[in-house]
Structure formats: C-alpha cells, structure tokens
Image (cartoon, rainbow, N blue to C red; front, side, top):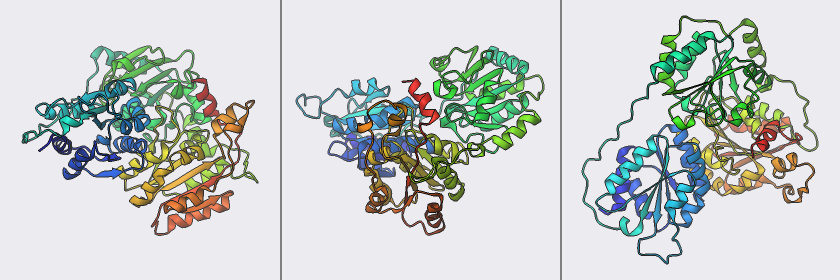
Length: 541
C-alpha cells in the first residue's frame, strides 16, 4: 500500500467517528482510504463548513472526528473552523495534504506547521514511509486527549510505498487523574463551611452529572452551567440553567448571593461570570480542572484542584462530614419553580409591523418543536434567544461553537450535530448574516436529506453592530430585506416566513408531517434595541 492508504486504514481501525471535507488532488487518496476503512465521509461545499461539521460531530458524539483538506488553500479555507475547534479543545484530526519537500515554488506552498501552531492547534507530520504508522497513531493519541491536531501529509511521502503494518496498536485511554488528598480535604472544608454554595459546571464536566448532583445534594449547592454545558442538569429541581450572559434574572441573583462558587471543568471566564459581576465580593472561588494552566487563568481563585471532575466530586463527597441544607431552602425551591426559565419572565411583546418579537418567536418554537432536540446557535445579536428560550433535554442537546466568536458557523455545526445525533431533531438557530454567509451548506443539508429545522432570526443586517454602535453610520451593516425562504426552497427546503405568532402554524404542520425535506423558517424579527448579552460581549473585545 501507499502511505496515504496506510493513514486512512490506521485511523479507521483506531475508531474515528466520521470524516468531513472537500476533496482535491492532494487529499483524494487518503479520503478514499478512510472510506475503505469504514469511516463515513460527508462532502461539504466549503472547507470552512467541513471543519465546523467535524468539530460539532466530535462534541456531540464523544468520538474524534476527521477533517480532510487539500494542501495550501484547502487548509486556509478551513482555518476559522479549525481555530474554533482548537480553542474549544475538540478532539479533531485534520488530514492536510502538504506540498512535496522539493516543490519550493509550488503555488500551494505555505508554512503549514507555522500556520497551525499560530492558531493553537497541534502540528504533526507524516515524515516517511517508515514512520507513517507511528506518526498517525501519535496524532490520534494527542487528539483523544482533547486536542485539535493537524497531521500534514506531504504529497511525495503520501505516494511512497510502505509495508502493511499488520495489527494497529490500540491506544489506551489514560485513567482519570485523581486529585491530591490535601486538595480534596481543603475543598471539603470549604463546602462544609459554606451557607450558600453554587456549583458551575463546564464542558469538562459533561461526563460527571451524577457525581456532581450527588455532591451538590450533600452540600446544599445550587447547580449551574457555562453556556457550552447547557442542559447538563436538566430535570434537577435545583438547577439554575446557564450562568453568564444568558443567565435568567433569578439565576444571576442567586449566583451573586453565593458565598462559595466552585467551577467544575469550567474556565470561569468573563462570559460565564459576566466579567466577574456574578461573583460576590466575599465569595470564595474554587476551580477544578485537569489542566494546570486552566486554573486561575481568567480570574484569581482561592483554591485550585488539579483532577478529573468526576473523580474529584466522588472523593470530596466521601470527605464531607455529613450533609447540609445550604442554599436549598423552600424559598429558593419555590423561586426556581416559578422563575427558573426566561420564558417565565414577563415582557412587553414587540410584535408589530416590523416583525415578530424574538422572544415570542422563541417561546412559540419551544412549544411546537419536539422536546428531543439538538439546538445549535450561530453568533450575533439574536443568539441569546434560542440559547435561553429553547429547552434542551441534556448536555448533548445544545452545541455552541463560539470559542472563537465567529459568525457563520451555526449551520455547519447543525450538520455535524445532526449526523452525530440522528435520534433527535436538530434545530439550527442563525442570524440572517450568518445564514447568508454559510448558505452553501444548505445544499449539504438538502443533499443528505437531514430533517432539520433552520431558523433564521432575520433583522436585515448585522444586528450586533447597528444595535450596539447607535451613533455610527449604519450603511455598511444594514441591508434590504432578503427572501431567505425562497433561497431555502431553491436548495430543496420546505420554507415558511414568520412575521407574527400565527405564522408558526407552518412550523407545526411540518413537525406533524412526513418531514421529507428540511425546513427553513425565515423569521422577520422586530428590533429589541440591542440584547444585553451582546452588550456584555463587546466589553470583552
């Protein structure tokens, strides 16, 4: 076999979940080798879309995904999606063709190692036929430790013959890292002395719901999540939902009142803490993480615990001297039951000639769409509405590819999530800016016959800019109304235009019907005057 075939076969045997990409001459052989090894391949319309599809698939399936791209321009086209994956610590392997060592004048030639390193991904390379097996296994091992790896495949090395390596060595999962006994004792002492503890769980805690819920019950702690872990504590009567910019008024009030805040696999960054405003001045702060450089990276902490979230929660629970009521009072229980969701908050409905209030739209969608859903959200002024108002069944019901804060990733995210979770209805929530930026992937959705719902919160421009820079000239960020429903039909979608609550009947009809084609909802929304979460976000720029 040739080296390209070996790489594909090895990754297939190691168990990668799915491959995405755009095939060119440089990655043709390795892509076909993946397919021959039993790895499903999805062809996207743009490498940027393919990168985000792979990212979302890995997040929602728990298995490393593969992105396959051509040398040079194929890699640069995918760069924003790869950067998002790298910042979010997604287990992703990018197979990037590279120019041959002697091709110094090739138009495709760039310093791919330097490019990859600059965005925070891990640069690896297949160096020779003799090292190809070890190089590929090393890239896979790095990826499963929650890293985005770019494995560069020089064309001359790809084409060389290599011996069949026989059985591919298994890559053992590293055991969960246990915390130090002194750190366990210190955290148990802080919890035992707290009257109003709050646990905030991040993406690093997504596999530790049961352990955290048991510890919280013994501690009297309320439960919250960062945005990317939304849904983790769904169904628990003491769950506050998301902490940060999307937090309900009640959640913000209760988190601010905490005397102990413990971040579990959570960065406690400016988004999750509203630039620190959600942490009371007298609150003690603890951070539990498997990465030493993550602890205290965004804010000072009183205690850092280096260890796996689930393992740490179990050991701290065992070290607690009994149980306590803590923050779990009858008054707090009643407040969460009455005001635990944004839809419980009263508001003045802005629906009128300009369109439907985005809150009214989101509540209506929450009512009409099946509860078993995966919600993916693009970036923009609108993004808090689907994030806050559309309930999700668990931590695999929400996918937010916003570590890099790039507009235009939401649709591709939905494709990857839908392929990872075909048992659920995928709902892609986009702004009109992001929808039009990524419109090529509407063809991918239609071609794959994914029965998803794409909701476009259409405010006829880049809303973040015209809302939050009110004194500026908005000629460069406002656009004429576009018939986005017609665009969807052109790609093979069913489509409805929503300007008022009654128009949501078209969505209900699609849900009740055969769902033989995906649905695009072009929602013409009324201006909210600027969302509070974007005001917070612009403070961090």
